[in-house]
Length: 478
Image (cartoon, rainbow, N blue to C red; front, top):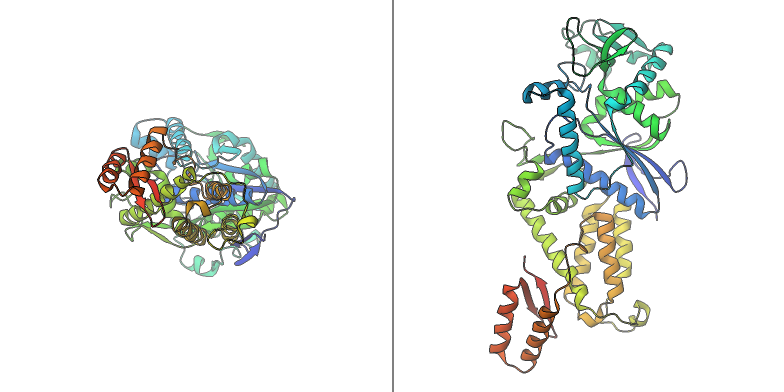
């Protein structure tokens, strides 16, 4: 099957071909760990989890690095303001190190709660200071840096392709530059590789470099850590669309200048998640966290289903009505997945049943799901394929469903979409099975009073009976 992704580098839907057959090197821009992440932050990591699952489904061995920015990210994505970790420390009356450790643990716990596949390398910036210093020294030796009062900067005029990736208008940027912020910069687009600790100050996080105390700029960490674990050229680099004009553009400039080769062959960027049509904002009180969703009675799998209903490149709008719709869809899928416990194993395979036009084939559905996500992580199409297949299952006699193919379908859904249908649909007890069989016999005997009584008894056990023309099917109550 052909695997295609929309590549920001080319602006096209490109066929994916890794540098080494069967191997993929993947870098994901991670969080700045100074506060609780909200669901808009989490959306990106769920999308990139689908990317990893898609690569695995195509028999790739994925080596993935994700950074934790625990130093150097200023309140401006450029080079102005204070370090977000220092800001968090002042807010909470802790050290920057304590803040970084706490929120790093919050983030990693959240990844586990969401069922995300963990990267092989999770790299805090503070643990890679020597590698970042080495890259700054390499860039200095290549003559593309200059030093001013507050740090060492990359001269973007020395990298002719600087504007290409984000299609920047550097002339307009120059005309609109707010030079009063830093009049010593040669070009508005120049960015800090290393910032100096201001004279007379002492930071929680600072290191000596060329005789002065300071800390790395935000952008250098990704280039240094990608190089340390994945080599000079990546297969895929991921992040949000807000990273394109500054962070990723700067990564490309410094990495390709330092290493002399292309930094990444494929770039993938997710769009924003809004809430009630607005941006996330503490002032609006809409910066919902994972804990907020669970406190309102939703599961984190409900949130995953909500996100998968949209495409990673499209802007999505979160509302609790939309989340409720996603929960209902997921609950319906869970109920349908329980039907596998009502289907007896059969020696017939799909080919043998092919002569019976009342039987349904499910093996092709698993393949169709993979083909959908292979087309630029097309999760909305994958969900439509599953809905169609489940509709056929609900309307078919259980004897016309091949259990092995049904189980394989559910396992494919779980592997590719991470919805854990196999985990959330345990078998019913022998006592419940006995009551269902007894009720079936009561219906066959037209003993409607007994049938209704047993139906109500099952309902108290959380089991809903759905009667069809040919048989009764049980489901878990939503």
